[in-house]
Length: 354
Image (cartoon, rainbow, N blue to C red):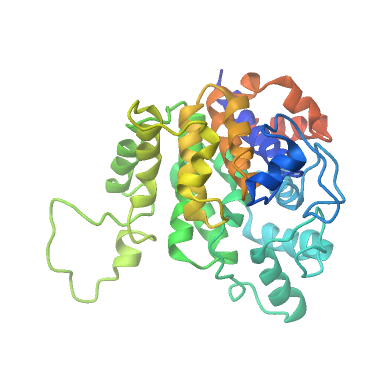
């Protein structure tokens, strides 16, 4: 595997995970999930009538997958991130396909973040800079998977782009730090670093060298803060680097023989089935470390955990895809994606500079 193969694996892996969730999305009652889809989902499935993505078919991308695709196209067309182009894309291409309701937008369910943006930009005509949602979910993280891929060779630039893009649409600092941290981890895996107990220590070194926008809470030279010093701007955008520590703790748990989650899909019961980012990421890191060389089992255990399984599988698919590369993803998952040739071509263009 080379870097480009890993980067393409991350992109296609995320979209596979997203599409796998179209049918069984948001079943919090696992008995109900099993009633309709059996005790083990192993492929793309059609959504049921009246569910979140009822107008889609097995292998289709729903709304968030479509937004990720649009974000990747922006990178290709602009040769990198453009704040102006992003805002124009949102205003002209994406928001015009929504109606502000949970179930009325392109690709099925519309997230809280996107509904808030629709309300403020379309209905209230509020300016960018005043439209960020209070939501604590993963929309901005997901949208920036192409950022993590495109800037995987430049963590400082990646952190800046993801931070700025995040705060356009979500405002919670903790959710922001976790979103940036995930995309930094994704970039490290594309670079060839393993998702193991040592990864977080490597990231902490970058924090102390001021390569990443996290405030190092502890240091060798603690003292009284200087009068007039703005810690937020002087030391880092985010309050602490703890978001960078979770991946290695989860990797350690996945490899510890005294810690057993069996079957692995029950990680959703350990860390929580809901949508909030603090439920989502521990399970994603755990599965991505446990199945670091097994894309199929990683994404399928993510899907079979129920709840917000679509995002769990999307984020797990990106991280495992970055570890096994496009060449390590079973062909049946790629061929089963709707418009797979177009998506493969987009992956090639998105990663060509790597």
